[in-house]
Image (cartoon, rainbow, N blue to C red; front, side, top):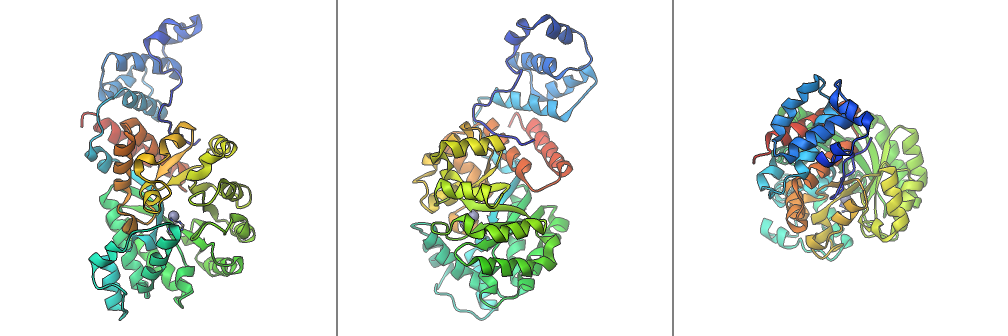
Length: 425
Ligand code: ADE
Ligand code: ZN
């Protein structure tokens, strides 16, 4: 089951005392006589919320029926959050356990590390200082960003460089309470420069293992094909990846979108699925809704990366909502690349109001002025999101992750514990 965040979500049976009065005789009977019935239980809890009781008291009162169930606890927490009209402190967003599903590891290359790796590898950069690099990060569109992005990756040469890059991102991610991250990598951006596939993936993979052990952050890897290159090149890349199959959970599609429709990669995605990879694709970032249709119907993706332009096509929006296809939305990226003029103009709330499973992500944090927490802070402020919205967005990310049901449940329980322990902050 997928969670869908809606800014004005109504929970079944959560309308409070009014509801109790309108109960049918059967419902009334259930209300009066334990054992446990979730419908009745929600009404009972809502009455207590309406009377001003705190989440912690509510959680312990669950014991009344001697049956505690995680879905019920969650329902109660959501109900409580909906009733909180308090402002959302930054500390609440900083501390909430998060997942990230759309981060290009090469896009986490900070200028400081870029200079360090250039020095280590005896390479000259077309910049004289870190400040000069940051000043160059003004983009007119996706293409103008990609030019700098591909220039930046040239400092990544040896396995240790990929290891250091990945360690730096995962350390930063952990400091923002990201508990789980799915990272994209672009092998063709390296193999095209003569770097072996093995060098790239080994460096990234060993950093992931070390980060899990030392920092407790879990991560998985998604291999992207560059859509401005040929499908033959993508097929050759898939071939190179097969010996490392266990290290890659999914394949994706990125780089310059307009003029490179997903259908161009139908064969390679078919092969990837036959080999057991899950599939995702960037679509509807700059490209039209038609590209999102193609990603769904031709590439059979489980998630759409970005997808914000889906809103231009009501049938597509309805399809994404009906099928519970998550969107990995990247608000600061969208503003930096001029998809939206400002965060205030972002369509995140509309997407939520259409019942879409929206998640928040950083895309290329070193280039776009913020990691995951900064993205959450920006949308919370600009779109005046409440605690309930933040909770649902975070919850969607764990639900949409390529994790087993048990793994998801462990993270979701951690999330709910955080919520119940931070209600007064
Ligand atoms: N590669 C890195 N960042 C990207 C983005 N935002 N869109 C497409 N390809 C990318
Ligand atoms: Zn991206």
